Length: 255
Ligand code: NI
Image (cartoon, rainbow, N blue to C red; front, side, top):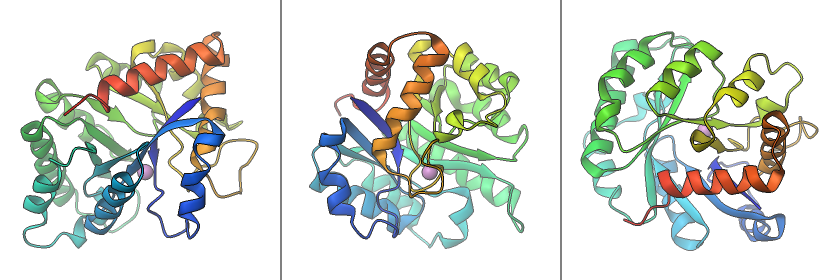
């Protein structure tokens, strides 16, 4: 069994979403967390979670989508967050990869959504890319008041990992851990305390080895769990069980 704590089954590439969802259980996926990145995909994530018992949703504005925010959207997001199957605010954060970007606007929206998470008692799912120390600085200011922080698809250095671990952040591993050029990720996988490890696919992106090039699906999360188990020298079952416990603690606690 395995849990995919970060999937975009609400992506348009899943024109067969019902079949993909129907196949989750037979592919040993116990739960999936569907992630929004703007208002439309947050609402579609919630719809999938409402219709499917094993799915949950995460709602919010990704830093690359903040230009889509309309008047009243932040209030709407906060109102939606009370839904029983909304388990976090995300994916939110900073991304200075694609020009043009507005650092100040990204920080403002990020902090606003951190505050929504605090007020609603929900954890946050964090996206970060090429944002240097900015994200770390903001989280250092806010982490004590948040109920949980999940570093989604972690791909930073061991030094950065150490900083996040110190704040009790969950480190969520995805397909890149299975890539041959996975750089410092195997070391991060070994150094992360077991109670802070999560597994995800970030599907439809980042398909794990040996399926690279194919569309990613939640079922491939088992390849990430397998790699984690191998690196940490535990059995697949032990690794899976630990991740399930962690996911329950941070995401699936009863509202
Ligand atoms: Ni994502």
